[in-house]
Image (cartoon, rainbow, N blue to C red; front, side, top):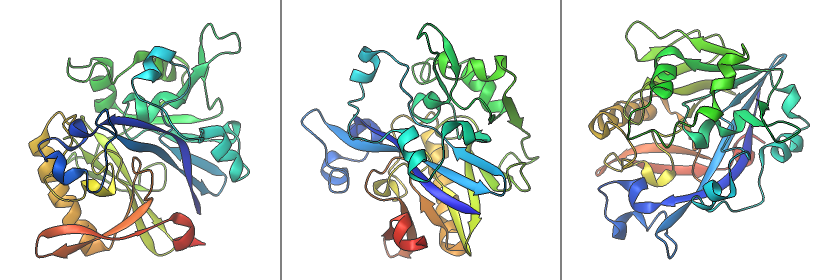
Length: 287
């Protein structure tokens, strides 16, 4: 097995929304804001090369939305998904599986693109199976008012219409799935959105967890640093508490999707609770 961090692009969101009740004077120490109070974020995917399978975890915001839409998110930097894949010798047609942690636009927008005539849509990864789960699919296709702007039908309805959508069975306890069809374990969390899926990957003697929106950046490691976007913030709090304790016990490496400057990190128990310990780039840890 080989793993490759895939930079699909960067964007900005309001720092206050990203840190909820935590005061700006505290969160800006780790995530400084610009004049509009926005902080820099990445949309980092992870590519798993496992035998004859190329599994892409999340795929960024994509490029099919309108200029007005993108103007709200201040896209920045030179990264894009296809260039990042090419860096490792792959193309979008090589992808066999696309695993979507959840269906918010910044995680799944790249799953579908404009067709050649720019008048309709087509699958970005035409040879791939796309993976979600039934509970989250229902949540996204019948969205609540709070999340409606994050669940854009053009980002995922074609997955089912095309026959490429696969739904992972939920575990009996609704929390943790072993022996998934993609050869990695999955943690299910519900605080941010219903049945978000966090892959747990065994790699070179390490356990790497793609923490998605449970812990979007290294600055979000402290327990009460919970996004204002979360639908059930108190549930996120308990899910983070459970996860962080396990991360210390199991010596997890946290893979950050939204931190533009830190790819991987370990956490440690301190007198103030569990905190960020050491950060790494993928290259320096696994070269």
